[in-house]
Image (cartoon, rainbow, N blue to C red; front, side):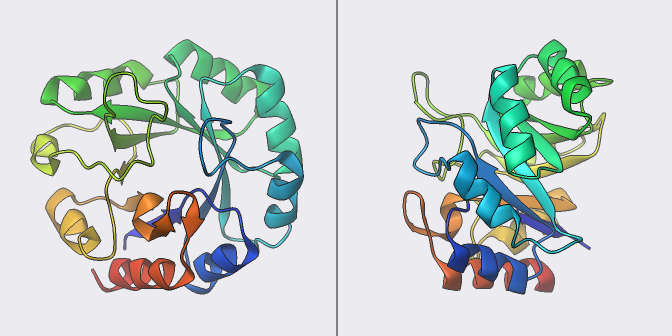
Length: 211
């Protein structure tokens, strides 16, 4: 059965929709350039509403140690999701916090998948995400999707999740096409950048459950 993470949450309404729809994980973004960025206090208030059995994921972009430590404490994190973070830093942050880590691999061509093997022994899960344009402020959450056929025949070196351009209309196809056991959505359940829509969250999670 495929499970789903709803990422970039910042309101009680959106969080409640993710919980009601039985998301396996909820994500809080700690990256100032993102429209989904949350303060430590806000993350803590949201985290307190998350019931047992749903993973709380902190999303970071090559973060400093002190940011990760405070976010992990205040946001009651279970998982670190790390973008643009070298394998050695992933190892360091996993040891520093003792938390499960996911390392994002930005994909545009088949050659980009080679980076996945660099994280063996460094991370617990890979997150395949669409590579954003050169110079883009954000490493993800832009509604971009990569060619899922690039995963055909690829020998995944670690457990993995699929992200990038997913929404309620295409997630079932994505699951069938790739065999992903975990899917991750952010902009695909928004009415505007950073504005999560409870109805779209519910529709996405129903589509995952029915896939």
